[in-house]
Image (cartoon, rainbow, N blue to C red; front, side, top):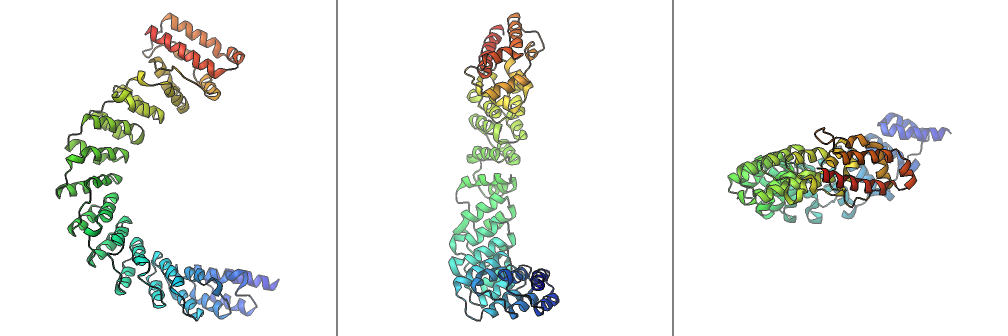
Length: 438
């Protein structure tokens, strides 16, 4: 029991980094290898080098899991634990073991550990400069400096070293790589595209100044990812043919909810009517309300393609958008029975009643039992007494409403045992009468 307590205490003391307690517990008989070297694992995880040294000296043997324990040590900025483990191995480790540990140290941004591992035999240029690519993505100039001293080629792998730095937003690292002589033209696609996607105008100018070019003009649409008008203006100042791609840029701006780029495209170029209509249709279920408003204000036709924008808004249950499109000219008669189902699922009963009173088509409507039950619970017959202006409907429609009121009490529906069929039939009949009386 005393030994068990000592072992448990050893693990806790190792995690705390309490070297004095560890020393006393080892003297009291605690096992340094207890629970698969649990104490050593904890000491390495927290970077307690003094405790690691005590445990190794006391007999903690990690030979069967050398790479695992080296990786734990490599994750710490302080490389002392790593040095202790490497000395304890007492043999030359192969690169197949050391290189993965080197990659771990790079990702942890531990330049001290990187130097220790390379000195121990890890290759800085293995796997087509994988180390440099990782260092660029991690954003460590210090590690790149170490690798460069050892011959790393920053133009290797089709520019992925520079591209990795930019895609992760490490401008200082990208500048260092350029200063080392990396050729931008060889990898303009990755580097410049990354800058555009990030909306990093400063990095874009740096790359262009270094000789980079846009590999394909269409790639400029990547500016919409961050709504970067600044990047677009830089390209235009440098001769980019904006007008030829303005409609494509605007469509991408709608998809990415990039209002500033959309506004620039519409205000500084002539967007064809067809393109504006298609942008509105995409905006109806993909964009924000401000973009929808902008497109309507700038000539997009809500009734285009049989009011496709309205259909999309209703299907995606963006009923506020649907209301705006109707007010701007979208035709309710262009909807079909699926609009009834989508509006029912959205639970906006006021909007549904408004659509029905304006003669929304329901021909071919097929409801599930659950959908019919929802309709019965939420739509009261008096909602159909008046039209959209508050005036009484014609007598024949009031009679139909009264018939619905009786059935809506539940008796006939239960008797028929088919609420879904009944509601579908009733709505079809109602709309025929509604349209005849309109």
